[in-house]
Image 1 (cartoon, rainbow, N blue to C red):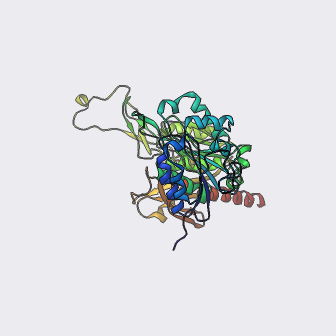
Image 2 (tube, rainbow, N blue to C red):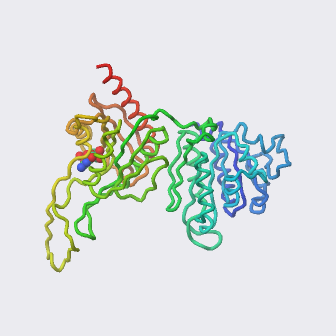
Image 3 (cartoon, rainbow, N blue to C red):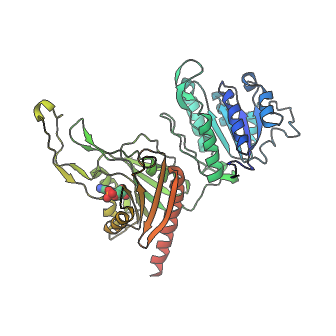
Length: 441
Ligand code: C5P
């Protein structure tokens, strides 16, 4: 039998008093089913929604819901001592406020304050409570201290409202936990008002030894282009493409997690800026090129992940085109945009280690090699876009990386965030080798 995803993992599940507490029973069951040993700690209010007996039956352990209680000889201070992860689901606005200010007035808040392992929070509440500046500021404080936040989602709320605030579904929380424990990376979760990427870079987080951030990017400046560009036709219309920007943003997030100084030059996307990433927004290919020119002089690594439009209108219309005036056929005169990554690859002075991407639907290897040479790249990451399950807008990807001596490595189908983690590791390692080899010459 294949190994269970959470085999030998010890997880403490904290349940605070929100209606979403009923979903935590399912989460608890799923964690156990996948091999984890789970201990549950509850606030008194949470016990009004779900009885401790339910969790005790699921976990085969006594549930802790009172600070004066020793559950099987373990108290609230010690409950996380040998745990891999402490997951609070749901985390109410009230509990978040207490975690942020260090209040320890019940079994869950005390266990959080005394926690000996990383803490993941899955907030759940009414949207006005969530978007209240007090809660937003508490979440920000907690993120900055290295708590992992799983942003809530939009949907029907228990109070009858619709909106942002519903606890993330059990499968998402489960995947997040698996990614944290198995890959030592966190998935990006975005919500319109709350960019909730984990930021385990503070001294407090550094004490969370089981999830130490990787630091091999320290001292390295990386510029990444991401997303599509938009080339105006007239004031209302543009030429663009289906790039979501997810791969470039994932690379930026991972590079920042590794301690690099990251500048993300982004075309229009719906994505939130990853923590500790400087973002420059652009719309057209020409603007992207200008932004790259302004940044690349100081960069050690340049990654061209953007889907840059190959052509733009020679002269976009100043006023909106009217079909009554343009008639049956419309001819637009396009001119080629400069190739940004090729410009960087051919720099003579201050040329960074240059990585391009190629999205191909046939002749993969030949096309990748040809582009590597023509654009003078150090590495090229080749994506197969003939498979709709990967590539544009999908959360998954598969790729082969080529260098001047041929295939460097291949990544089978995996999440873009996981691939970004592996790719950034590879790119930083190759950059360091390249630098050492250059120094020896
Ligand atoms: O030639 P093709 O567009 O397939 O090459 C893709 C690679 O080139 C990507 O790395 C993309 O970011 C980059 N590119 C660029 N500027 C352009 C066109 C593509 O940087 N104008």
